[in-house]
Length: 129
Image 1 (cartoon, helix red, strand yellow):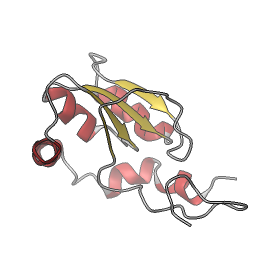
Image 2 (cartoon, one colour):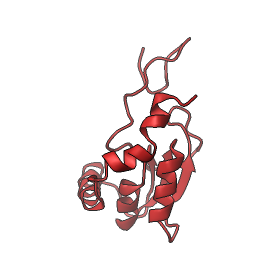
Image 3 (spheres, one colour):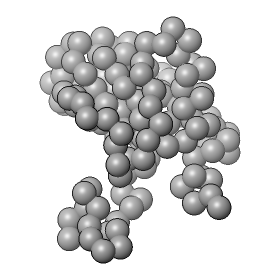
């Protein structure tokens, strides 16, 4: 049985959020890069990258980008929108990132953070007790 977050980030997501465009992502990334003082060429992990709008904007700005997302649908769209294969796209759960890095920055933009709280028997590594 699909969990709620698997249903929520499927084909319907592409319709509901079609107004979230690449031009806006470029502007958001430009501001974020300024805040973080990221040097050109550094490695950035876009955690919960969705269809890759921000990942592509980061690559356009000269960064080495890896996008991680749990949704097969959104990763397929990201790959479709990246025909040159500039980014590395990885399927994975944000609670157990399937990479070891290193990365110079990890970003999480738009949605996905804050959906999960305490795991049964302990805390999530993203939440405080």
